[in-house]
Image (cartoon, rainbow, N blue to C red; front, top):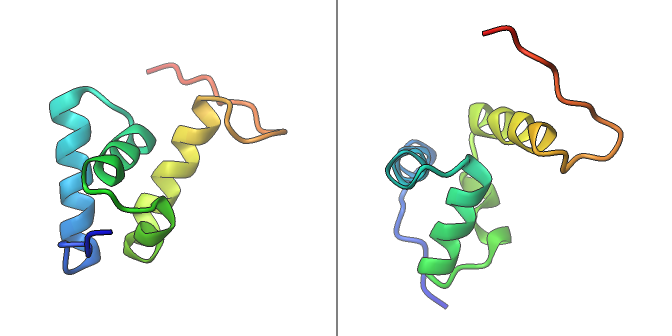
Length: 77
C-alpha cells in the first residue's frame, strides 16, 4: 500500500476537486478514483476530509440517493 502523498487537507481537497472537474465526476466518484489509482483504502483518506468537503459529500450522497431516509432537495436553479 502506498503512503498518501498529500500533506494536508487543503491540498487533498484541491486534488479531489481537480479530478472531479477534469473527469466530470462527483466528489464521491473522484475520491474513489483517487484511492483506486493510488492503491489506497478509502478509510485512509477520511482524516484528510475537511469540514466543507464532508458537507459536500453528504449533499452528493443525498442527491444520488445513497443516504437512507433522506430525499434530495429540488433546486430551482
